[in-house]
Image (cartoon, rainbow, N blue to C red; front, side):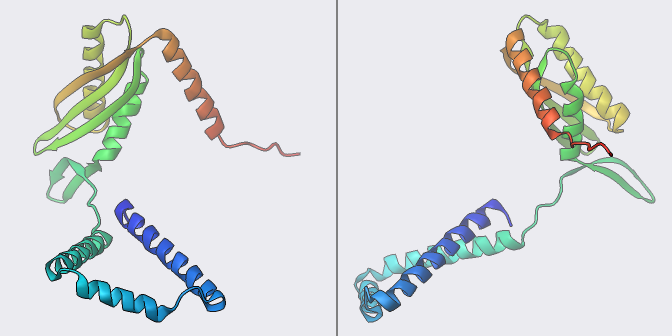
Length: 200
């Protein structure tokens, strides 16, 4: 179930919960008469402009159909083709390619928070890389290093033909900011490591 459907379901469940609580309390407290509410609803529908009422009902119908379609619709995994022969195809999910290339770029010096977007083409892939760089770094050499690293990894390690490798610098950070980010990263990695209990 996608996020949109979850929101709709949460709203409906909250409405049912609140309605159930109010109805349960009303049984003993007699706060209102159900007949009066039914009469008010009927009166509201009778006094409302029929065109407006039809428009509201149509909107409810459309929203319901959208929710139903989204519930049964499943996104296909986007893939890129490595090779094709008589026995079949070899493909890798775009998300996997992006993750692999991004992790490889994260190991480069002076590169901060790299992001990678892969665009599949009929004869290969296009790599679009984004990251922040350390202030004072040689932009020309560093951007070429990033593009070459992404290109080499995708072609040699993953087996893709790289049509083009683009890079965009999204900002610059100081050495102090880089050290703080590295410390936070190391702390998060330590927290994620499973604890090993020593045998007595």
